Image (cartoon, rainbow, N blue to C red; front, side, top):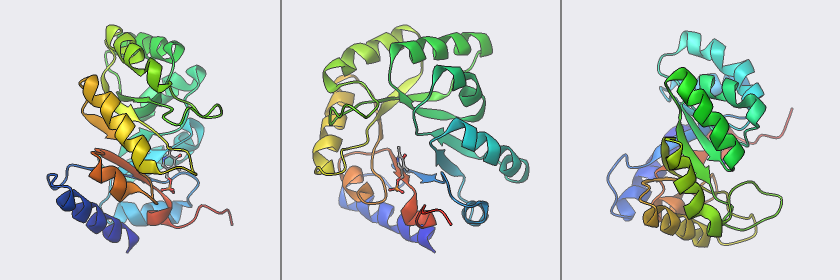
Length: 217
Ligand SMILES: *Cc1c(COP(=O)(O)O)cnc(C)c1O
């Protein structure tokens, strides 16, 4: 089964990098996947999943949560402030904090609820205009701003440009995290998670290599 295969490769990458076994959390990215495939992975005992849209996750996960304990959901796609309340109610971790307005909204919700998901700040390491995330040059200031709001910032997240060497982006993200005293690194997908683990990833987001292609139909 693909899940076991990915877990083995993660363990090998951890060992090769001299990192502790289990140092990397595997987020199985289930967006757009048919429910049968998601259920098959749940039945293998996996509980950590990633979704990139709040609405899709809301339609899909409450039913699974009635049948399976300890499901741990991670939001890995952009979050609009008007969906923030639904997001904090459903997700244990949000990987896409990327602007002051969203930080303020999350801080207000945290005050009101007495609870906040773990947060990763998304950094646009490739400085791509169409991509979300703070620019590398603005990252330190934004980390400080989020901390000043008492938000539980656990680490940084990036999605490297498709046509560039991902290792350069993972190394940059690790460097920004280290100088800000952050331990969490959400980086690495199906095609490059082993490289990400070598460079310190604590969370890899793997979709198609576990579930198969997302092509509809
Ligand atoms: C879809 C997605 C992934 C998983 O991509 P695969 O290539 O299928 O592993 C990881 N991270 C983010 C932010 C995504 O949107």
